[in-house]
Structures are given as C-alpha cells and as structure tokens.
Image (cartoon, rainbow, N blue to C red; front, side, top):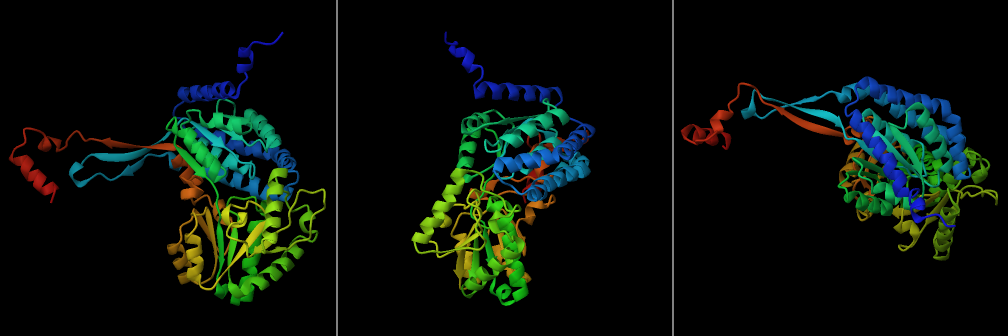
Length: 481
C-alpha cells in the first residue's frame, strides 16, 4: 500500500527549512538584545569548537575535495577563522556601544546617537571552495552582532557539513545556529525564507538568483561573488630582477593556494610585452623548487569535482586548438589524481572561456601590454573585479592605478592578503558583489544602526510652530540663508 502524499510532504526541504527558521526566530524573539557577556561567550564557544574539532574538520575538507593539502587548510581555513573570532572577542564590546552623533545647529540642545541592534536571523550560504572559513566568517559577524544564524553548506562539502553541524550543536546550540546541507533545490528554498539578512558567497550567476529570491521578502543581501581579478606587473618591476622574481613568487602563491579555486585568485596577469618569455621560464623554475613532485605533490590541492575538472581540461584543449600558447609550468600529476598543474595561457582568443569567464582553477592567462594606461584600459573595459593586484614600488604609480580602477579590494606587491585583514572590509563592487563584512564592517552589516534623536526638555521648536508670524519669518530668513 502506498503512503499518502502528505507523508512525503512532511519531509520536503521547505518544511524542514521552515521549521528550523521558525525555531531560530522564536529564540531571537525571546532574547532580542543579548548582552555582551552572552555574545562573547558564544564567540569563545566557537573558538573552543574549532580547537577541539580542527583536525577532524581539516580531514573532512580533504575528503570532500578528493585531495586538499592539510597544511593549506590549516593556513587558509582555520587560521583566518580563529583570527576573525579573536578580533571580534577583543573589539565587540566597543562596537556594541551607542555612537554619539552631532545634531544640527538649530536643534541644540538635543542629542543624537546610533544604536546598534541585532537584526534577527541571518541566512548564510557557504560555497565549497573555502567551506570552513566562509561559514565561520559570516557566523562571527552574526554572533557578535547578537543574531541567530542558519547556515546552508554546499552539497560538495557533505563531510565538513556533518562535522560542523555536530560541533556547533555541541558548543553553541541549535537555538543560536543551525546547519543544513543540500543541492540547488534546497538552496533555492533556503534563500526564499524571510531572513533578516542573507550573506551569500558564490558565483555571479547564482548570486542573481539569490538576490531575486530574497527580493520576494525584501530581504537585504550581502553578495560576495567573484569575477576576473587582474594582476599588473609594471615595466619597472620587470626591469628589477629581484622585484620581478618577488612578483612571480607572490603571484604563484595567489594562484597555487587551493589550485586557484579562490574568488580573489589572480585571474589573469598583465605583463609588459617583452616580459612574457622570462615570466614563463622563471615561473617554471620557481614552481619546480616549491613543488618538486609537481602537481602530484601532497601540498597541491585537487579540483573539487569531475565536472569542474573536465570544464578546465576542455577549455585548455580548445585554447590550444585555437592557436594559444598553453604552457604547463609544473610536472603533471598521476593519472589517478584529479589535479591540473599550473598552466599559463598566452594568446587566448576573445571568445575563449579564459577571456569570458572567471577561471576558478590553476590556469593563468597572460595579457601583454605596451603602456600602463593600456593595461588600465583593459581592466576598465571589463566588469569590476572582486580583487586587483599591482606589483610596483613607486607610490605615484600605485596611486595612479588606484585612482583609475575600481575593484572590491586591493593588495599591492602581494596577493590575497587583504582578505585576512580584519580591520578592512571585504566585499565586491557591481558584478563582483555588494555589501561588506569582516570585523566591525560585518558587525554593522548585520546590525540595524538605529538612529535616535533625543529632544531636550528646553528647546526652541515653539519658534517654528503656528500661527506663523513675524518670529517665524525671521527664523526662516536665518535658517535658509
């Protein structure tokens, strides 16, 4: 005998999600303004959770990837997560305090202030590429601001999702934060919930769907997307061999971490036209030293899925057939490994995936230029990127590039490191995202900065009240001059 249809409906994603959301909403309503001692303890509990489960989480990430360097996960997942939490613990009390604001000359002796207030329940949509850090970072902002949080993990991160869910239940509690895992259908239902704010990290096309779903509830969104982040090496840097070598080392650091599966990884490098061959040769020599076993090295991360692997392999073959110079600059991996060596592509056609889409892998196109302004024009002709990198020691050159380009964030003579600064906001611009978080910026994003005007018992508002006579006319003449 078949079960009634209603029995299956009870387990549908919408029912499960709604139940979790309503439970978190009820918990928020029972404690709308947690004191600092409560918020601090929740943050410290997350720290204790990460310290207890650190190796289980790092191994879970490795298994989800097929292969992920354990050392790399400690550096790029665990370390920045703990840094952000420690920063929030040390600064959160100060962030909570109401902020005095000036009142206009004619409103004295009244006073004004901004009062940070928790929003409620925050929805956090986590991608697969940094599944721990991009869960804990937004969660830190949500907790320090006094909110509850509901975390939707990627379907590509099932093992970490299981560990994180169990660990948060143990250390923080399901009345404060819950975790769920699932694919596109569940993600769609998740973003349709009436959250008080959604923090989404992922691709630009999916970000559009999230924003569309959130609009049904007028839910504000912070979208951390991606795009084609440029890296400029100037001619003066190329002419200085030690600085050119440093630029290559830092470029490859930004590209080899997570095998380029990073939203702020350098997506293409703009080089002086005469520097191309030297860049390729020096990169090959440098990577041979850092990864003696090439892409087979245990310190070199694999590609997340067969689908993503085939996308990159096919794009490289298409570029080669189209006449581009395709240069693997690492030894090849073993046949049984889902890895791609760092590969430089010179001369990709305008229709190539490497020109049109965010690469999100260990492939770095080379774009030669004749003048710096030509390189700047190339960047500005494309959608605004999440990150921009410049290698040059001249402050005037740095200022010129900073003024003439727009990007979500910048590292000069470095790659990636701006994201690790808790005193700086992190976020995109236009197609690479909207809104900011990290540190105090995350606290403000996930708080209602409530403006409050306090009128004094003694005030001059009676001078502007009807009946409007000569006094009113004099006041208007003074106030509108």
